[in-house]
Image (tube, rainbow, N blue to C red; front, side, top):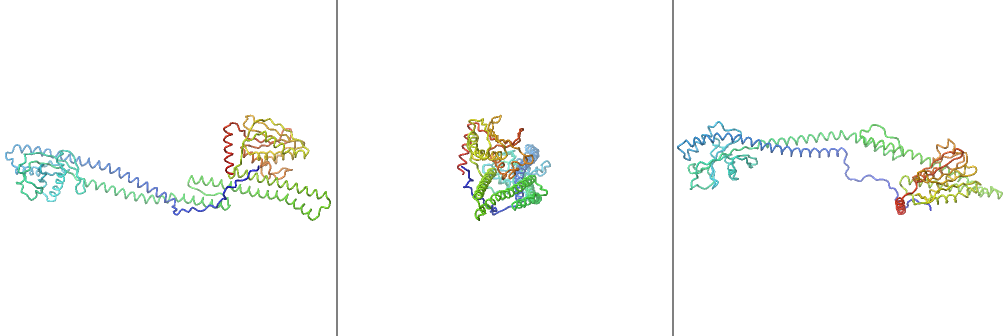
Length: 541
């Protein structure tokens, strides 16, 4: 049974252009990546800087508060000592004395703002005593103290606290001291600005030391703005660099694209010039090798068709000439007509054999390129030997020549296509029969390592001429008495399809010797795999 090409294979279609609606230049891809990297870098750096700056602001404000609190310690101690020594300890005199002490003190630190206020903790009423030298300062201090009292910040003494004041973060500490118990008839109401101080009986005094961190955070905002401006500048510079860096890449890609279009049109000249990218340079080298292989294959194909057409034309012309001679009565005698018919039959057989060989070698080429799957199975090598001997025996009897057999194998299996292997051996037998003098020797045995079956076919003819030996297995390469130069090329192609080889040499005693080696199937696991492959191949055909 002769294998046929896969019928279910779809016809190759002409490739179409990519129908993607959006095609983005490679420079924009680079630019987009750079923008993402820059934005991520700025985002991460900004978060890192803010976390560091916030800690720094807190520490700086805490240090300023500590310095201011230390400066109030001497004031407080001096005030208490003088207050204890004073005989007049009325509320009004104490307040006036305290304000005078603050106003005349030269030890108060300028690191923070100091506000003095009195508070009734039961009702939450307070009165800011200091600062009183400026209406704007007094109003601001009054608002700050109001928020501190509202949040009950006075309950935690000598500890840095924070509050949000008009969108600004205020850090503060409270220092308190109690002079006397509050009066039982304490008036109600928070608005003390329009009341007489003598009507307010508040005995708890507090110093609030606070720092406005607005300047620090403004500085941090300016740094963030500067960082964003730097990022924008970096994006512009990245755009310029993207164009500069991708231009050689785009130029090289376009150059290779033009080269590919030339190959598609049949122009296989290699691409020239410098390609900057290492990867694209390697691609250019591979494409040059591809162009060389395609050119070589195209030349081989053209030569093959020319030689094939020549080999086909010769028997066809002979058949046509003798057929016309028979038609028009050129051959008068019966003997001449019989000879003409014999020539037509011989040439027809030669033509049929040539066509079969051409089809077979085409099938091997398709299998080699992956477009065709040769069906294979486990075959007894002994059976192949018996089949080929039976098939060629008639030719030897017709030529009055002998065939000597030496079969040394038994229960030895190979994996392949039986028809193809028989055709391979048959072509070599035909070649040896053509050149032998008296007989052809056929041997079959295992190689020394037992991994291959060796089919050895030799003759007692003149041997292989030196000028022919170099091109012996090339297509349409013929010796002195060769027919069409396809047989040995087909034998080599079939052997290679079966992972084997064909070699030829001259024997010391004279004559040519051909050795065909095919791998032996050894393990049962290999047999199972091969049977599975064969079943899969049958399903695909």
